[in-house]
Length: 450
Image 1 (cartoon, helix red, strand yellow):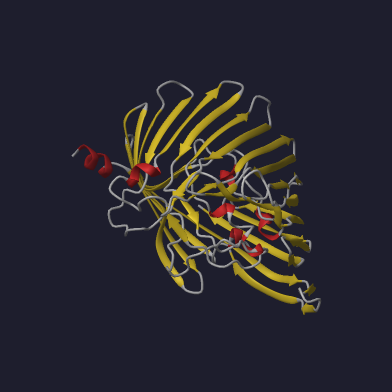
Image 2: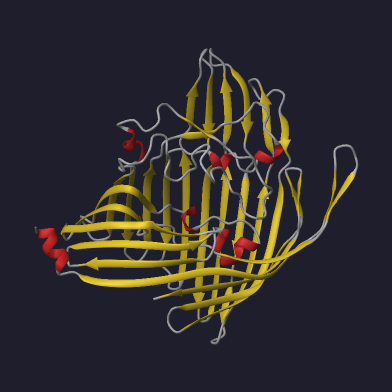
């Protein structure tokens, strides 16, 4: 009765947003590729245009947000209309009920994102047309509820603690993983960024049982953050997951080397510190330590997957009309290890270390903001070792470097419109023996919200 009365007296608000990318021109350069037999195959240049949205994730999108809130109770719903070869209407990642029975206690249930502790340095829009860049979660992941229940508290000033249990939807069918594809389902498998070659579909195999009665506890997410006055905010969290490793044959094909480490789904521990003690400056440093996954097979053999560790550093400095922003993400230490019944090492695949650096300095001229975007990705060798002690080590992936740059103008007006347009170029390169073509793009980013 109390919740119903609060809902009846709540203030209802309606908001909407739309975002899309128009590409009036794109040129993919021609390239000559030498085959193993010494012959050369010519791939001709391609030109095209199209519509999409940021990061190439589907077609243009319109969102409708409906929220009702009182002093203690809030309900929210987000509907999405999106065109991806067909027009679809769906509930997106926001269907939330929120109740605060006490000033220091809050209860949330549904589908929602909580960004109170998320990484402070995001990403640059132009990266979709230069070099792949991780999103705002690279430094410290947001709390993401998918059919979840969260309790959060601020017992003292500056301290936030939260605990989320995910996967409470009783209608979810057996074997479904909320954030990863189901083998054989329409559209499942890994869809790489445009600048990567097409990879075969990756199937996911379970670790222990799949979604039994207690599996919701594996998706638990526990986080805490404390803001030190005048200095910054320190954060730590455990992000649970139902562990999964990609199915892989004994022979690792070169076209799979880029995506194998990303396909490992494992629980992880994260920590971060954001320094805000200097006016206009934010420095955010974070690290992620995935926990190893071990699978046992008939006969006593075991397979251990260790997702790469990651360290990220982001910075943003504002001085007058000049803003300098950038982020570096480093991944290292990942491997796939196979052991025999007696624990003897049968083979190890050490994933390539990876460095991803992006800079996007900008200057506000008044009528528009000028932004320079530059991205670099350096990938090391992928090493296979036969037996123990590193014997018979072989480089099965040579790695490589990707580099791209862009220049754009951005203007915001009428309170909710943002328009950004410019030009970007990704340089031709060879990564893991695969020739990636140079791409010149003229993108136009359009966003509107109220």
